[in-house]
Image (tube, rainbow, N blue to C red; front, side, top):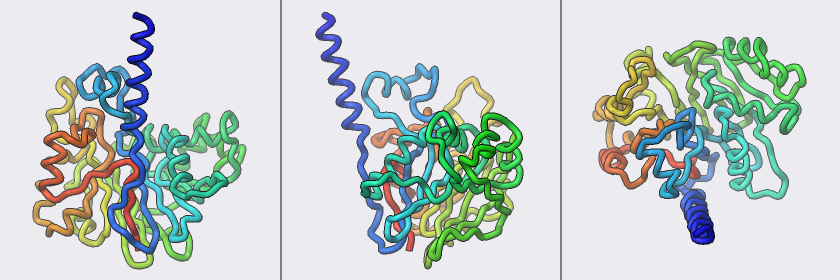
Length: 319
């Protein structure tokens, strides 16, 4: 009996490993820089702690691999350096993925980390850069003013600054930040639950093309900008797809955790041309969101409507 249980456990582990190895998937070919998706889940990841629903049981029963927390990386044209957008709880695995993509023999750290805001999935990976772990030296971390105040004014984050594990670089809304001779970014202030810091998305500027990264926003209509206009001006738009619909969390007041649902976003974007719809890559999925499952009817509905869904290991060219 015990031997049979052990054999079964080994088989399940192997199956999860094989299904979990996603590899690198090219969206299209390009000669410029590359955006690599490092994670697609909401802050708490997939599976989520204490979830006993069908969605997370699929993982615990060995039927579905886990998903890392939402993060993307920008790689230079020569693939000799990269920048990280947010520092998630999965940063160890995500930096390993970046180095597998680089393909070199020496482990490389990011040239810089650009933080969107102070919710747990977007900055807590910084702890891995500190004394108890990597004990890094001077990694540039780009932050808005309130985010800087938050990191310097509370432990354990202030220790990272005092020990110079990280170097905080204050950025300003709508002001361009030059990363290198080919790439720059612009922070875009967006409405979100700003308990500890402001929230920004980033416009990423290549030599010719642009990308958009907005993993968190309360509602598109609350933003002073037209999201459709930004999509039209972008080669790729990685956008908040936390919930598929408002029916996902029975018993919870979804107004306390507002996000534009996938259904709402698709309705708002329905006037886009087909090639513009394809630029939209939904990301940042709650564990209850059926888009986490590639074969779900909801996934097929989104893709059938012409929109994209970000997946770990997928690459996107940015010329």
